[in-house]
Length: 282
Length: 121
Image 1 (tube, rainbow over the protein chains, first blue to last red):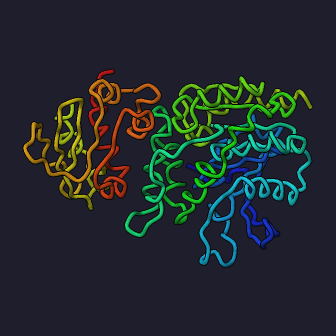
Image 2: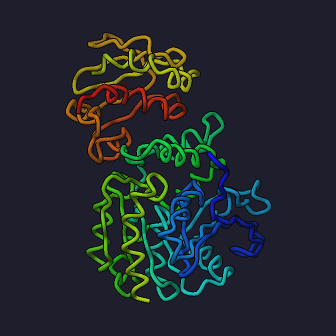
Image 3: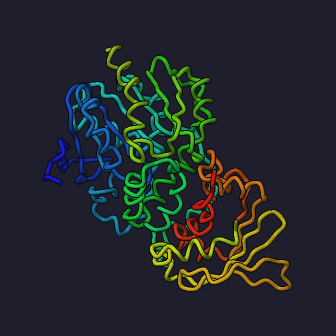
């Protein structure tokens, strides 16, 4: 194999985020309409590596993925050792808007998966005017806890191993082994308590069931894509949001909860028509 | 199916290596039939079918027979492909001392799913 650089450029942005100085790791590539990508709970921006390496996407879109604070190569804020990390809908929304402002993005498309797919519903509800379009991957309005998240952060269980174990079944059984294990690796190496802190938003704070009927899926250009093997954000939940908001909802065959990471080529086949529609509506 | 677990797991050196710090006995119920799965340092040393007089195990995984049969197919349909999927649908119960289960979750999932490896369809 001859050495080859990918077209992705990664940089650290120093700025005030959520009222505190932060050092955030951001990757980007491509040109055109900004496409701001949000990773899943307990993972990082590498989930979008497939998109960033596909010229069919990057020819017309500037693909940007940031690691949330505490995740990937982004640091937690100074003093983190004295606090418990807990993501809330309020802080998550503010984070996305502040990152978009710091990067001076003009009406970006935002695309998020899982917790990112959930926050897309909040953005469609509260901040639709800020975005050209909103693409929710694995979006559901609420997921009730079905296991005790205390297992994810305790001294006598390896946090990375148990987090990967919890999410492993959310990858479709048809996913290629290399992408399955890359996806799991991001969980295996996650920081202690970070996945659990994200799940505070996913399972406790971020319940948007009561607001779904107030979302205008057409006006907010909301698109929903969900993998058939996802038992966390279920296909039924996604289709229900589609029916109630008018958003276009598509169930993706042979994909699970991490479509962009577990099988990038298969996912991109589903994504491209959406990106083309958004571009055509420009 | 379930009786094949020791041969299938013990033939996989990587799987045994991943479970090398686990020694426990857990119960699997396939419908009304119970099996005690004994693991020593990642090797499955026995699968003992019930009935039991005083079974001694750390944790138990219980699901109806038709659920396990679907779970053990070569390519299970959505909702049937992972024990957490069965669990979330209310078809599988997990109880007992969950520490060995959660601390070795990736390994246990592969042990339990081992019969899938030689499924015809």
